[in-house]
Length: 126
Image (cartoon, rainbow, N blue to C red):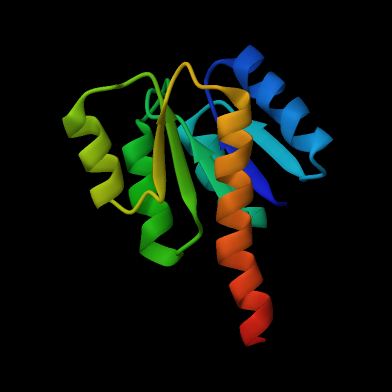
């Protein structure tokens, strides 16, 4: 799987999945922190797009769990716009933080950039 989307708003998650699939990414979406950690542990992902406000545990919890075992890129997408929230996410190891509502073209460009920087370098060093 290329991208794991963790977003409690199903309509928003489905829309983002549609856009990403149109760009030829393989995508899965879940709505809770527990589902995210289960799916990530079982299948992995090359990128996690992570909402902060989830119904069971917050996205910071998911980020901390991922960072304990992996350096998979994590892109936080959240309606939380306070400086402290952004700093918390970035200090916990997120690669970027995008505020909702976001422009889909900006989102796609950021995701493309992460893949180019992260995985093109891996191919060069292999």
